[in-house]
Length: 148
Image 1: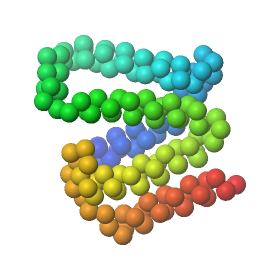
Image 2: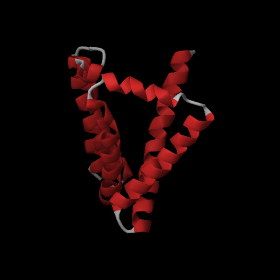
Image 3: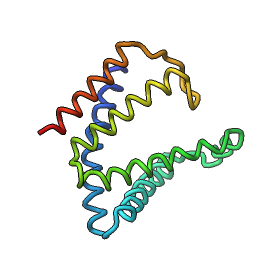
């Protein structure tokens, strides 16, 4: 039952990305600058997460747990900002389907390496031919999407 819940959550999270891309493009156009639009999108997201932290009464002292980690753990936020900014810049030029298809292809291809080598503290999961084939099918799908 948990697997169904997690799979459903993953699908819904994926469904939200095209909505996010389209709305963030509109936001960037409304303010006249895609990077300013990305900033505002992250500001709204930050406020939403702040509301959660306050409502859930998260122990803010837990941030002290980061002191034993490498400073690189903070780069995830920059990765997210880059991704959102890239979506805002690319979506009006490539369309939602091609932009997201290319980003998914990039995600899946690089994810195989991250899993295989256990980078960033992830569990090691060896690359297999079936996984490479899955990524190849995604790349083929992106090619089909762009070849109108």
